[in-house]
Image (cartoon, rainbow, N blue to C red; front, side, top):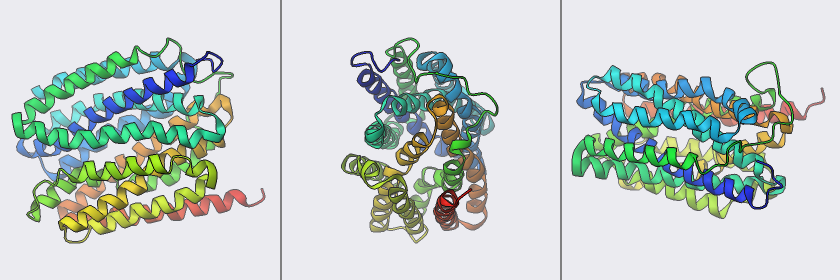
Length: 384
């Protein structure tokens, strides 16, 4: 997509905003209902860990490649196979009657998320002006957060009204809408491919930020996998309200602070964001009450609001134009590496030691991620 085409950046942004909203709504209906569904099929907490691990493993393998594909073939061409994978996965899921079958089908969801969400973020990052890149990315991720906010309560409401079958039916409908929205992108749209970056499938410019993100996201799936079960064990129900509240804080902070990293700098925004995530997981490790869950939702939502948009803006700032797609794909894949490694380990810890241990472990790895950010920035400032 040429930036000289009048209005094309805005049209691309709106198309990507709609895509990320619907895709995240569908994904998080499944993310909150499938763990409970696995238990009804005879699965264990370890199975829940692998449920998220399989999806993210596929993503970590695909996302670095997606950046290069988007540079070369355009956004719509890359997204369409993801839409097909999403539709097929949601159509087959209602037929799965064993935990391992459900886990295997998560391959399709991983393919869809890698091809669609990564490509959409690449388009937005490359179309945004440098002095407002943080603002554009924050706006884009407001709508991914809105999808995350809608998905869990929608999933619980559907399951309560019509069981898991109704939840599956709605995700099928949302997957069809997602695929239809891909066609609103102009053929060949995507970031400019002024050169073909050869060599390794990942970008060296994104490696420091990717290492930080891997460490932080090792505990990311813990909230979605175990918070409903943790709250229920404490007599608070499934606490379905927690997820829209957390996402509400994320959306509000992204709107209010959308230009923070453009004005104050990327790293000064990242430091408090990561610290808030560590504090939020620490709060969840305490015996849950309604008040403690509200505080945790505020901390996690506020921290999440600036983490990923600011990391992408940081990576794009430091990457040559011809390699930006690959760099964003590398960073996106880092998210999946962290979840893929961390989800099974923390699930095993929960199985052995209880929910509090899992949330405490998430807090510890997040704090280690903050330490890694400070270390990589210090090394970067040192003369070669």
